[in-house]
Image (cartoon, rainbow, N blue to C red; front, side):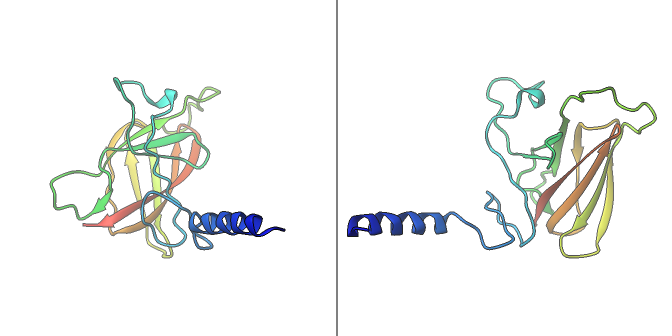
Length: 163
């Protein structure tokens, strides 16, 4: 291999090394503790989630792991113990279901949140199912959310910064 090829190869390896995260972490737009995987998107909302929005539908949002729900973050960054008068407002939007929901399943969005690396677990509920909410957590950190609504499930991680 010539000197020029070694320089190019070395540059590519250096660039790739600068774009990767340490083992067990994801490259995200938010600083997060190890094991936390929130991926805050800032591009346009998907077509199925932009009803009621006008013009540019860009808003910080996080997709569920299955892609069946999106959390639009109006209180970004989410913060524990806010002192700025703002709320941790989240608009939950569910992807339209391919089949009719089970009528015996509760419509409410049930959230079971676990603080990463601990046994701390809390529950929250959005009455009526996915929609507008204010979701606060008892302390800052990465929260793993198990989401259940209308017979459907998904998961996501959200980070709450210290206030």
